[in-house]
Image (cartoon, rainbow, N blue to C red; front, side, top):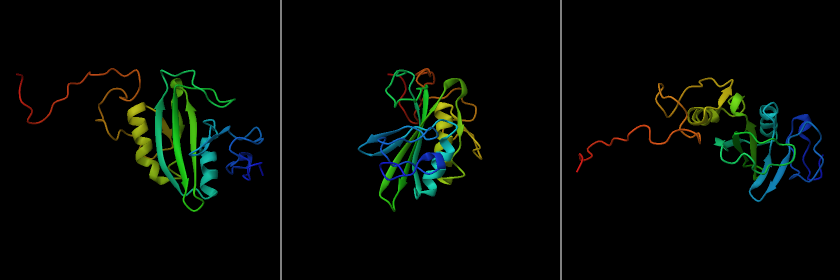
Length: 179
């Protein structure tokens, strides 16, 4: 048990200590936030940590998204967490316990691959495809890692901060011609 009443992530169960107790070497750093607990597992720990939260009663993955920190390489993160260009953020909810946890995993630009959570939370299927389509983050083990918003032949990933803006003219049906 940790000082906050949770168990260490070393055994796969989530820590609920809000970052004020010794978590051991195998557990990711945590940070206190007014909106709930935030954990920072490594890519290798990611699926196991989320599975631990699922086993501990977090019934829902409410959201999963990608973030591009190209313009913020020196952002503040807890000690021991190395900032990378991309981050995958999963928001887990326990309705029965009235708790929320945000799982933030750093994903390097040179190897933008992270484990899929589809086997733990099947509802993330479309959210992981969206992060792949718009950021180019690949979710290893996903059953259908294809584009979901952009055409299949689209080149690039439009929500990356280095993606060219305005390359494709927008055309509207019924729009008046040039004036």
